[in-house]
Image (cartoon, rainbow, N blue to C red; front, side, top):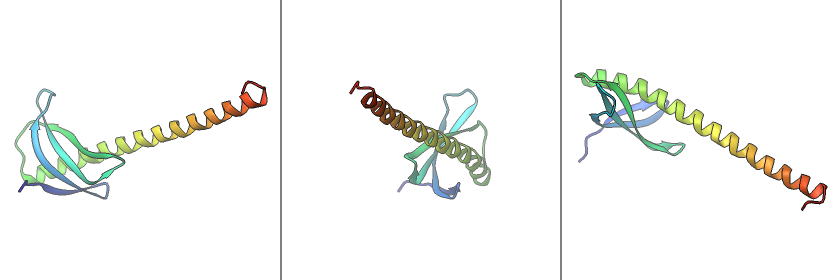
Length: 104
């Protein structure tokens, strides 16, 4: 059975599933899995300084980084949704203008 450390991030249930070497020099990445996903985000990495951690230290630093990651993800997806809705409104307006001026 796979070992996981349960955590709460932004009110969501999440798990630290493993720590891996990061692509960034002198960093590690803690892999966090959300259950359930948040706006399509299921798993992501949290870069942390490369050093030894106690379980409490690891949980604390990962929760802080995961909080920021989720906030950025939610803000980005909300922006994308607003842009998509605006684009749909502009398409509808363009259709109406085309009809009004006889181009449709």
